[in-house]
Length: 129
Image 1: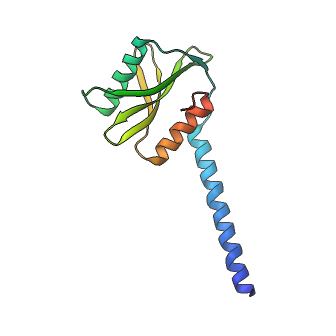
Image 2: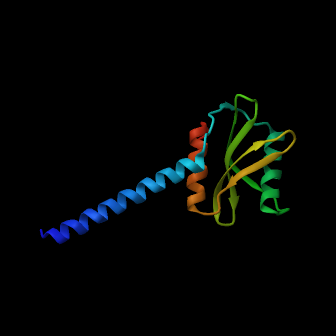
Image 3: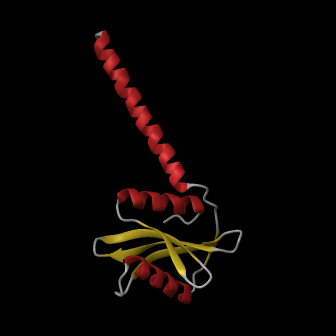
């Protein structure tokens, strides 16, 4: 192998490593400090509030079809939720939390990267989808 080809391959490997490191640091920054939670069962009233919160986020009055949905309580007593909603394009992951009286959507995936980040956040929190 010529020295030139060797240098080109080495540069390509360095570039690939740099991209991987950037992607990893970007994912860590997006996840921030995520606190694990203690799993809890969601009541029918909470599931209704989740549907209302997702409907508000989507700006629609159409019924929201909830898929599998998991809840957990953090050390401060806040209930966090991860789950799936049915859309025209299939199931989409979401995450959110309960405020005093309502459910607030924190993340609603709009593309594959958003879906990956949402699922990763939920998994780290202990609410893997």
